[in-house]
Length: 558
Image 1 (cartoon, one colour):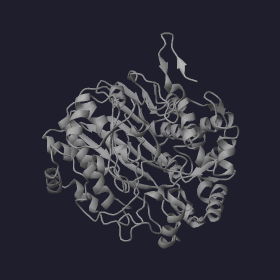
Image 2 (cartoon, one colour; image 1 turned 45 degrees about the vertical axis):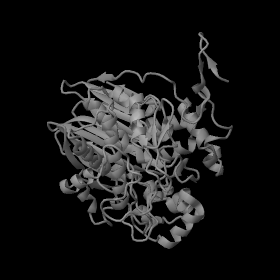
Image 3 (cartoon, helix red, strand yellow; image 1 turned 90 degrees about the vertical axis):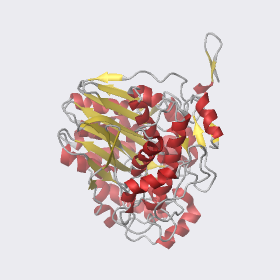
């Protein structure tokens, strides 16, 4: 039934799925001073803020929020997924925590290709070692101040006792119903009485049991214990390629972030196998085309330059970004001044290119699906430590393969491998795939100024470039997050499309159409535009947060 207000105006969003979202102005920025957590779900943000109030630091808070997201946004993330962090400890150097896993060492690439042809992007062949839980342990050991058991307890309680289903979560479960009903476990865990109603209570006792064991074992059980054994049994039964040794030998990787200076900001991103280089390359290209640091998103000339720069950078990504231990480091050339100058010169200021080929390396077919369910959270504490943590199952509920008795699905990050022989990102044994996860940060005068991130798969660099452009133009974090967005579909074997939210200025829409962009206009607030989180650390000491109205975004401030 459609809701009706007193003046007779209908509100059709009340029963639209997926992506039901109120048509509103996006809210106001939240200001705090001692700590802040921004997440796409309120209980997660509040769990992190409670840790800060109890004396924990930003890394402690990030783990508590991350675990709570595994309970309250199970389509986006879970113990069966991966994570990449960007951490800037107070007074220290930024560091990337790469919590992504490898394929099994016994994987046969030809067998994987034939399995992929049969099973598609959700089969057991797509499951690599889940790295998110190990990344908690590694980050906590290096930076944390509390025990894993303390930090996971709120998530255990939420899974055991249940929490109330929001419009957004119900819409997501409706969208994933086919995947969930493909297994008895998925049906029992989430659809026992049909898709949960809005404001009904969702309990996940098996997931509570899993989190409780992870807490008591210091995360060990997922890699060398009962949960590990269940994962191996599950994949043996479904045709996967992970064994006990693959799980037991998994290690979290520590990396130096990639960095560029632009417009007085030092922008930081994770290096490959993350796609973070896309944002840095695209912003450098845009600045060369426009001869200024950042585009003005109210000017069609600037939007066109940014869109074309992003499309060129995504084409480069598909040719060169891969497991850093398998690739040859060619991605570094994407930020070389001479290469950027030549690439920028190829951007026509008057017309969109029909397609962009890679400027370096050999273009090959890869995973370019728009599907992608990811959850980012950002934290800043009183000391100045900042964290952006992005975790994911890739598609909604990942591979769709449940780990029986433990309440979670395994991810399908292996779908991001290229199946083309000879590709840098070619599927093979013991390899990490290209990852769309890209937590972000910006420094000014050697202090964190912005910490940000988003979901959005192949749109993450696009979303972050728009956030930064809005910020430097004077928007506060909430204005930047709520502003209308575009998404340039990379294609993936079909004609490229530039999607625009309806709120984009009419002059920009018309100007893009005249520049031969294949436009598709969407609604005011669209799921495909991702969910962004943002904290500004003002020089005054204020923490200013923005959360995304496209989801159940929430800012918890102290």
